[in-house]
Image (cartoon, rainbow, N blue to C red):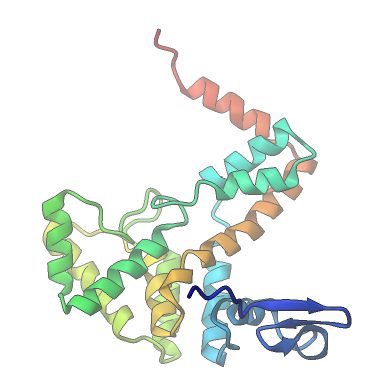
Amino acid sequence: MADHGTSMSQAFPDRVEVRGRDLTGDLMGRLTFTEYFHLLVTGSEPTEEQRYFLDLVLVAIAEHGMMPSNVAARMTLAADPGSLHGAVAAGILGCGPVILGTSEACARLLEAARASGGTAADVARRAGAAGERLPGFGHPVHEPLDPRAERILELADGRGVSGENVTFARSLRDAAVAEWGKPLTMNVAMPIAAVMLDLGFPSVAVKGVPILARTAGLIAHLAEERERPLGFLLAAAAEDAVSYEP
């Protein structure tokens, strides 16, 4: 028989209960939003290190300039100034294996490697043989190093939370050099996945971290868009950059 229950929350006439806790009597005023997010996703309050690194990665990826997600959101708001929610949604809809969704692919790769007992060299060799990109490596702007990735790894080492996933990620960087014959930038997605997994964060929710973070960045872009409109300028720039070939 199917389980039709939920462990998330329930609203009652005199209170709201979330994950077995009283929202107003226990959580509000005590938990930060980062801690609350962890509770919502996992059902438990984070340890100090889980809170610290969840906070860290949210800050690391909330904003990264005029990325496709931000451009799509700004252009949507320019076309429909009253649709803030639609503009935010437009920015999030492109979250996939190229933008924002890469951490999920990295988490799956790390978990699969651990489950199979394969080495970093095995993973790199299979990707190379299949002509596939290696998730978490390469970046159009940051090279040879992604400063965000390096900072996450530095803090993970410094606070003693680097575990087998961080170790494997570093081994994979070396294996990628051997397979492709050149250095590949380890971008921010791989350390995010590795540190989150080492801290016990569920892999199924890893993609939610960049989505949550980038939502904050999108709202900031859209607040600026209303004061300093760029949406139609971006559309015009796209028109100028593309030639018509009948």
